[in-house]
Length: 62
Image (cartoon, rainbow, N blue to C red; front, side, top):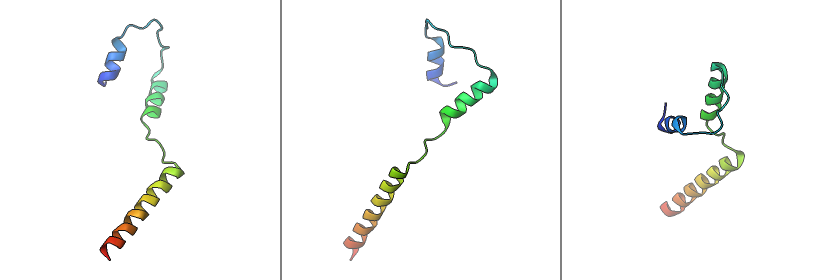
């Protein structure tokens, strides 16, 4: 258990969260851990940056 979860578990809370079964808890944490998918715009930006960098490296070297 990480520090944030430990602190959150011991904080006073007016509302008690509903109890989850083991399978539901596994699904919850699996969904929280997944890495965000790279979007097409981000991939385009990375490709453009790499292209410009290679172009500048070629111009400077020549």
